[in-house]
Image 1 (cartoon, rainbow, N blue to C red):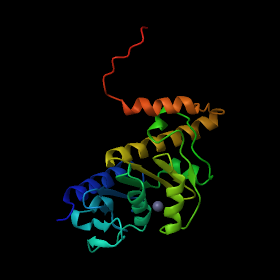
Image 2 (cartoon, helix red, strand yellow):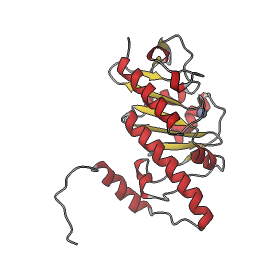
Image 3 (cartoon, rainbow, N blue to C red):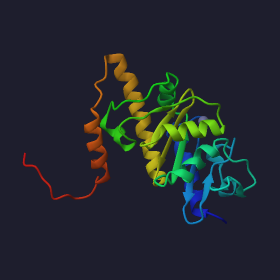
Image 4 (spheres, helix red, strand yellow):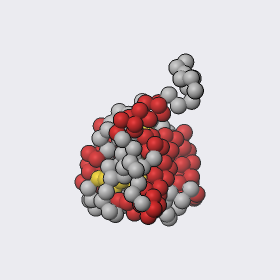
Length: 221
Ligand SMILES: [Zn+2]
């Protein structure tokens, strides 16, 4: 079976996405890239995530967009996944969800500002891509353009999309962006949230790169 490991990984995260409440029904989609073969494994359209099996995952050629393996219909947003693999060398996995708070913010057509330092997993902030009909190349292009310099964007009146070096990273970004959208919404009801400065967020981005690694630098308390 072509891309067996990638298929299994896509299924694992598809289940997680439903169980973690990050999307509803068959909404959203997940894919991962195999760099050597330049093929992507993506969830099919309209199949319950909890019932997915490896044969249901569709394998697509990144260069041509043609189906290489699978008899199911690929996700309607497969071009929105493929565009990142074709033109962003730092993105090897993509997660698209309709999570509640990110989607709510996308309906206001605003970007998510740095309301919490955890947003640095995605970037300095999370822009909102211009609206286009779901499943269109226009939406793929709008998402790609808006994601320049970040790893997440809101899709106006639709949801969010994230990308990472691995599926674990893209999924982690999705969880944190959703968390920050929720915080933003709650803090807005309490007052005007204090937004972290760009310099602080840039420092956080650097710090996250070394997260879990030992450093010799130490400032005395
Ligand atoms: Zn969608």
